[in-house]
Length: 279
Image (cartoon, rainbow, N blue to C red; front, side):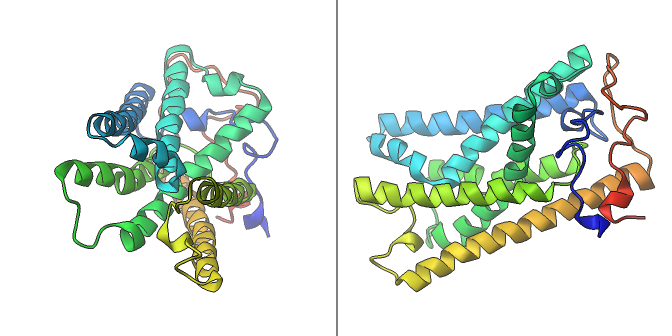
């Protein structure tokens, strides 16, 4: 079926010739650049403020241990993604061609896979944290409330922004592979941390408290949840592209310096909607 075909920009056929990663259907490039840069700055400030707070309040161990938490690692991922996304949008705004389209093919593919992770993982993190990890009696301090809200609630707002506002194409099915691989690598990190340091990053991974069947159930639940969220996000983007471009003719806001890419025959027409299963 045509609906299962991956997008051309992600898997050959010329990478993102109309600069979808760097542009928006509604926000001018300058605005998109500043929003992405501000979101990146906020995420980095949150992370480094926590380091500074821990360093002045006897929490150095907490700072070191933070690199063993998937929830924190994915927040680092958001901070860096938005920094690079701002760089690409800013370079397009000022020169008409984003840095992304000047990179080598492996780096461009890595960026598209990176995008897939930052629109999928935050929803997993938010759901797991508030369902399983958040303290039942609330957070003891205002700082803890702010920090956890920023990293475990606003992270999903970051993801929603990237799903709704840029002109990105629907996720390619091949991007399920790095999403699963990264989850498997994190699982290895969690148990390596326990082996080397004697503590579990998450209680539901503790084989001393839970049977292997219960732990496996949690792991499989997160895996299945990730795949379901991937599919939901993919088709939300399909709907967004159809509504904005096909239904309302909002093909995008472009730089006055725009340099057409390879095969850029018609602005905004790189996604062939019959390949998305939409007539």
